[in-house]
Image (cartoon, rainbow, N blue to C red; front, side):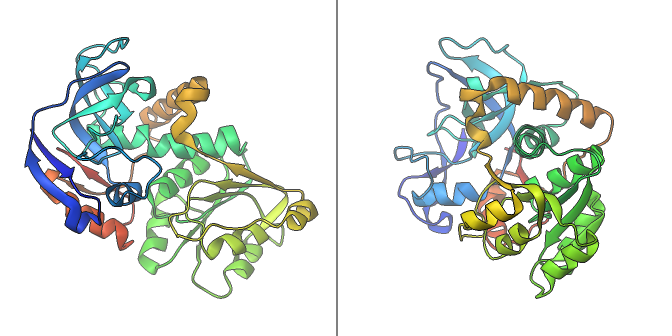
Length: 326
């Protein structure tokens, strides 16, 4: 099979090599899939460099999230052969390949009429946003939701899900193109987070009240503006730190507004609360079937296009999600 492999850690531009290797064999708790679509994640860039939280032995194939058709199962796995699944990869045999191993305990089975590019985003991207907004954030109809990095994959999913339940959505992004993209996803209002008056604009939009929920997958400088924009008893959802800098939440400010800072580490829910994932899965499939949500796919690339996709992602020039179809 063809696969992108890292034999020596480093930036993807120098560490990735397209090789021809044997398909991996599933071990206990694993399944082999014929990979049909996978997401391109910033975490894969870190993985290649050896600075991500998972550090598989060399050589390894990156691609943390994937989807495809079950071909074989390891001991203790009861997935049906031929099932269409979305899953987290079982490194070192990741999704940037024609065949991949998956962690069966984290897999979700999908209807076979859903296209794989949509399926892979409904699995990871929408799951992350759904669990964050509703299980952790308790977002309700009529509340104000501020989505940072609204043009990102999880950001656009959060906009759509927020609108679907009747929340009033403000999306923040850093360019006119990305702001227009956020409006197309259903945002009621958009804010340029690079502007000096971004905080004043959020205050104006909410009539001085502030926002009930902040959805933050980036951290960085905008986090300071966002936390100061919280309303009384607001909830600040910490999704990730794509912006680099990790935000700080002074305890005195938390107390003054009585708000909550809530962590959202979706990737480990299958270990601790599988029921949360299954509840989100049912709701996501229902809303997808009803046309309430639609994955925003910026581009679909073949296996050969992975280096280009990682470069575009690192340059933050993408609105929506990049999907690879091996």
